[in-house]
Each structure stands twice: as structure tokens, then as C-alpha cells.
Image 1 (cartoon, helix red, strand yellow):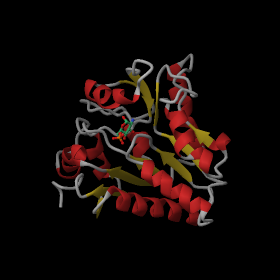
Image 2: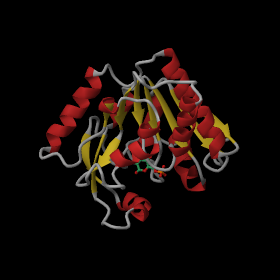
Image 3: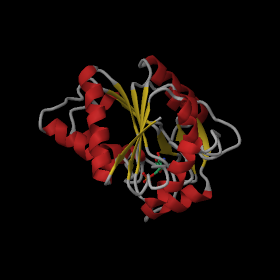
Image 4: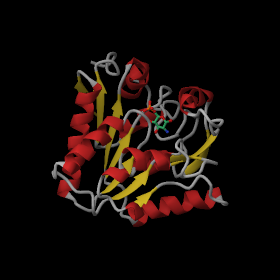
Length: 241
Ligand code: GLP
């Protein structure tokens, strides 16, 4: 695990966005794994800027998103599908037909999970996966647990995740279930970038970097991956360096 510290979240986001650009410049038809939440938002702003400045094109990129809430329309502003369109996809030249996200409204959710996993494999696997981290160490929606859920699966969200994310839901009750890529789906990515900012993430970062490798702290499992870069600002990295 490589730790890359910057004074501010903007610094971390800029460095991480340059790594993503490098990936796309080296391999134009890269498969990128995207994340939602506040952590990657500045990265997306930089990617939009670099695209507009002509530094990079996403025309041939295929995208897979980590997770989506169950029971929410794609067009609802709180869906992760909407988030990705609003914060990235509609501002760059990516082909929207190549932007994949789990369908949380599928009639057969189990089948949806299976198909999603197959779609990642048939695209050749993810070249670079972007991750945030929950205050409880979750990645995607892989919540702390006694066992690892390897593949894309349905998850019941923990109270701490509901407490953290319900502030975004003003006109509806926050869903209590989600579909998420599993730990193995994430670990299969060739390269992983995790970005964290703010003091509320400091303990999860410390535990993931130095603590026991355990599904109770899902991000700690990333230490078993050969190419992970963790971008932290001073606050999120305060216990580790
Ligand atoms: C959500 C997402 C995660 C994200 C996490 C942290 O639960 N499913 O992918 O990493 O929240 O969110 P934030 O970046 O807003 O702190």
C-alpha cells in the first residue's frame, strides 16, 4: 500500500486525478471503476477540467460503478446513477452506453448481481478502481462483517452508514439496502486508488493501514493487493504519518 499525503484534499484529488489521466492516456480503452460520495468529487472536477483543456479523452473508456441503492429510480437525485451523470459523465466525452451501474430496481436482484459481475469480467476486468472509505472502514457498501462477501451482492446497510448518508435524503427515507461490488470484485482491479479526507476518516485510515487485516475493517483487506495508492490529506492521515 502506497500512502500519498497532501496538505489538503484538493492536493490529494489533483494527484489522484493525474494518476487516472495517466491510466487513460496509456490505455485509451481503459475500464475504470468509479465511486460516489463526497470523497471523489474533487477528482471528478479535475477530470472534467483536464478533458475540457484537451489533456485527456474518455471516448473509449468503459465505466463500472461500485454500488447503488436498492429501490431508487436512476433519475432520483439521490441515486448513484444520477450522481455520476451530474458530477462527471455529462461533462466529459464518455459514451454513456458504456457507463455501467447496478440496477437497484431490478425485479430479480440476485440475477442483477450475477450479471453485473459477468459484465465486469467480459469487459476484461477493471484497470483502475477509485474508492472512498466509510467512517467504519467500508469500501463500496462492503460493510464491516465477520465474513467476506466476495462478489457483487445485496447488502443491508449498517446503522452507522445510514447515519452518515441520511443527511443527503431530504424527500424520501434513505434506502436500507444496496447492491455493491464485493471485496473480490474490487480486489480483481489491476490498480486501486483510495481517497480520504477529513478527521472523521482518520481512524478508519489508521486501522486499514496498520490494523489487523479483517473483514471487520473492509479497507484493511486492500493491503493484500499489489497496487493500491491511498491519497490522504493532513487530517485523514493524521494518525499514520
Ligand atoms: C458511501 C459509498 C462509498 C463511499 C462512502 C464514503 O457509503 N457507498 O462508496 O466511499 O459512502 O462517503 P463520503 O466520501 O461521502 O464520505
